[in-house]
Length: 443
Ligand SMILES: [Ca+2]
Image: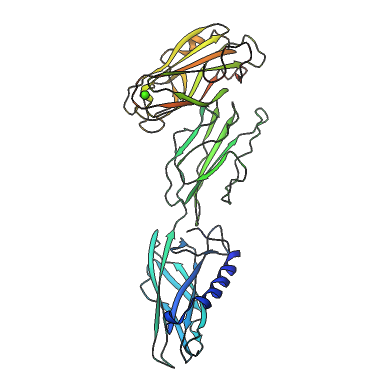
């Protein structure tokens, strides 16, 4: 349960106390009642305590809890009330103490009630197992001034550990030629109520970037205005805004719950591709094909060749084994089409999404992951990209994606990128200018 800040504790308690005087009608009146109003939870984030108003009240491993109880007394005589466990707490919990104990309940005229607040401390025991347990608390009179009376309250307490540390999936450390709006996937974390993803450009003098460094372990559960921060319950996320191209980035995923943050693992790094084209509405018709045109510059270095050409493809398609992908250089000279991939048929290829870079020397496309994304990492094209090496890096290009099966399985191109030899001036993405016959996106 999420705990509120302690600031609301006094407000909540006051409103409850006020409300009780009105709600307690004679019809439901009993001589002696016990109820738990709320819990004060002590956590790594709230060492001074935060109110948990909703049972099961969350208790953190190795942290205490205070249960704020309210006794209601309607008897024409005064009495002492002792607060004690009404069930076995050991070995999961210990009752640390109650204050006041005993609590003196004043005599009333039998219709008006006397209220007494009792704070009960609870600590975790030697066996501190995650889960929700029912504890009974009992108020008992000794019978000094009247008959022995007891009041019992059932309290649900949920013990939490801090979340597990993350296990990163899919984007291997030091992956290069990543799209600028990649998906990130990680293994669902046990005990995490929410998950936070932060991505940061690695700023160096040689490669300055606007992005900030990765925040220190975030103590807040807010992303503020960062486009490169996400908080949610899912174990996957696609970046909302494009990252800087041709830059190194690192990312971090932390689970969070009332009882703290997960332990931080080594933060994976990756490098974005050089010239990236984010496609809006790049639908690939079922049983049809789509072409995507783009243009590149070599930063004034006319004639620089396309050495070590790599083609990043990020395509959201429900069955990548439907797909045939090729690249054509359309200007200033026409070359190709060069077949990058053709209906990969390996086990696990009938799965969603490609987030991969086609590059000579990569793994066969048919080595599919068997999970999403079906194809990732560095993938060998069916025809060597080195055949494009004598071409200029600048110019116009066309990526063609064919969906070869009219089978209801469709998808779209999210983004594609072109990169050349890192020793050369990097390719830059540019928009088409007149008199080009086509515009970026569809032909
Ligand atoms: Ca299809």
